[in-house]
Image (cartoon, rainbow over all chains, first blue to last red; front, side, top):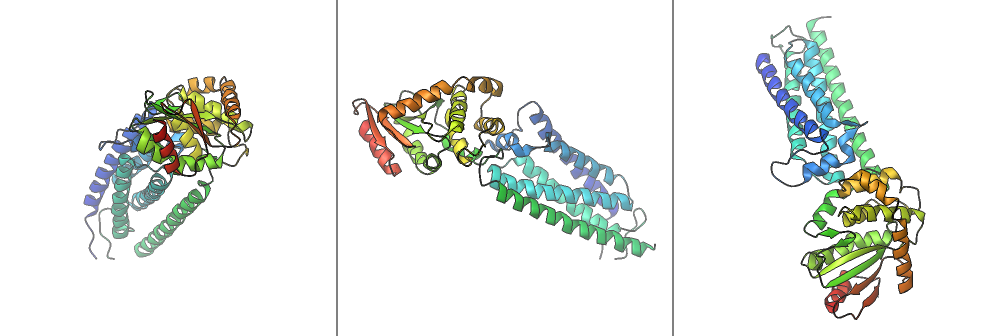
Length: 149
Length: 233
């Protein structure tokens, strides 16, 4: 089974993680002043989600956790060893799982959808796939060398 | 440890983590779905639905609709009353869509607190929201998140969550004003009793053809209310 070159995977991970940092930072900054992210397609979904009690965990805006997660993914893309491969996979897995939970909350509890949150969930899904391919393809190998699996 | 062993170990750990993550997400969703439906907590439901229902209908104090509408429907309700909550979700939306948004009628909510002291606290909080033009949003959202009667759920955290969800902008002002509005709640309760009402919700209508206030009691359908409003104008 052939896998994409690890260098390309790392570049793709860095690209999508950087996008994620931007999205999460925008949400956090927009909400820090008591406002809410602006839905580009119109509607009040972003405002409703931002004002809901689900937007904070232990008093901290969940977008801040998002920034930390994306920064860790970005950092993992700069290293080519098993710690970075496994760590990147774990962070993306956690972010993906939490995105599923938040999407459920938006649809069935808050009854509003924020496109920025959906965008972040899509980015996290892509990052999980990339990190999973990277781990399966290159776990246990020296930097940049493909596995024989 | 050989490269192959190391690789196998890492992939096994990754598979375990994936199963663990799936289990955690499922547990979170199950807990969330089973805990949010009983009302009376600060995880609000129906914020978006209330926004949609009331969009396009102006709010002034506790009145919904064009202030110049000829016909005024008056609802005497208790925020703790489950029947009022059912009315708010099942019957009044029809009136709001067919007659209030078209400017044919306005609805005035007045507190008729018959269940307990928590009703008075809640009613005063609704009046304070009305001072910022969010009275009906507050009432509707409260109904959709109502807890058990006199169960202690009407506390500061719950009321503040409702106020925030209803779109009250100045929460500090709302908080300071609500303490001074219990007399107004008691006054409308007395008014309902003077009219002869004994339960909630009770309705009355006032218009050019009613010769003062006409008592409707508790109509059993939106159609009855629509007819009464049409006859009053």
